[in-house]
Amino acid sequence: MTPVRTLDLLRRVVNGVTLATPLGLALAATGRARLHRGPRGTVLACGYRSPFPAPRATAVTIGDVVLLRMDAAQLADRPRLVEHEVRHAVQWAQLLGVLGFPVAYGLASAWSWLRVGDAATANVFEVRAGLADGGYRTPAERAVRSRRRRAQPE
Image 1: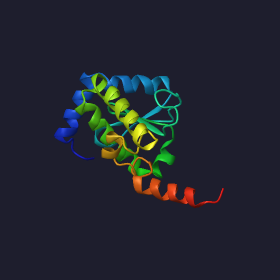
Image 2: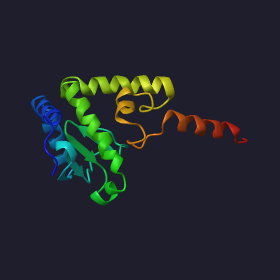
Image 3: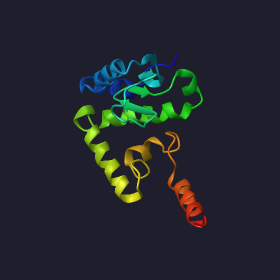
Image 4: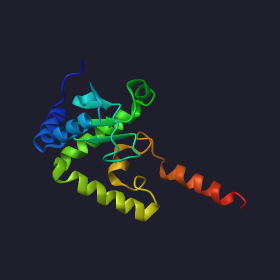
């Protein structure tokens, strides 16, 4: 077992006091997820079934709770996804949980949509969490796909 890092402990306290983690646990319960200990003091909520808050997302982090629309076996095939989501847990704490993160993330998603046509590629929170780790296409991958599409005859 890894020792608790001071910054992880601070993140957990901030996410608890700002009610982000309690909100994540409440969503996990309503989504009938199974809870497991995750890395760096996070909680993995596997088998999350609710469409809220992001109906098409494979994983959503609320405070220190990672809501996963997959089981533990599927998650084992995507180890980098959990690290991506842990970075979001840090972002929740940095923006004081439910007070700042949802609004800031929503604005960043809107900005990304306006700039590049999707909510993640230019979203500063997704970029800093690692686009590829989260399963998103990087800007370079998007450019290659766009060129291929334009090269195909109609």
